[in-house]
Image 1 (cartoon, rainbow, N blue to C red):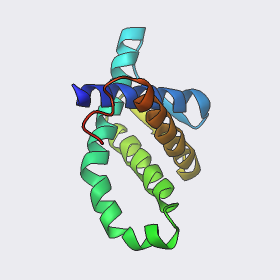
Image 2 (image 1 turned 135 degrees about the vertical axis):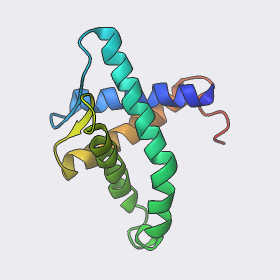
Image 3 (image 1 turned 30 degrees about the vertical axis):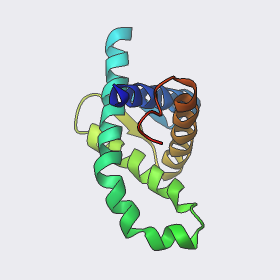
Image 4 (image 1 turned 90 degrees about the horizontal axis):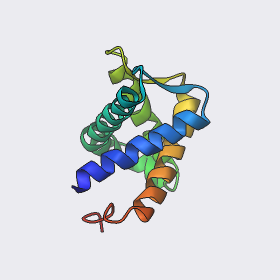
Length: 129
């Protein structure tokens, strides 16, 4: 159940980032239901990328985390957003990212929004403490 909540929270955070940023969009879905399904698919792909690729990148870039006092997290978030966009470009629907700076801002927005939503939604942080 917690995994489903995380996907829903990520979908809402990605929706917020696409609403705020011009260079970030989710394409696909003609009606509201299919549009929501596209956001959920993008959030699921983003969750898989974060679960599989992010630990490897974080381990390999650990000296940069220390050197930048943790600010390199923003770069890793941007790279995960860009990787999600690249993987979803292989289909007719998914996330489209214009460039690195858009991905950097999107990573920041998604991180903050998902953190706030995790605090607000009951049971979303269960198992993460």
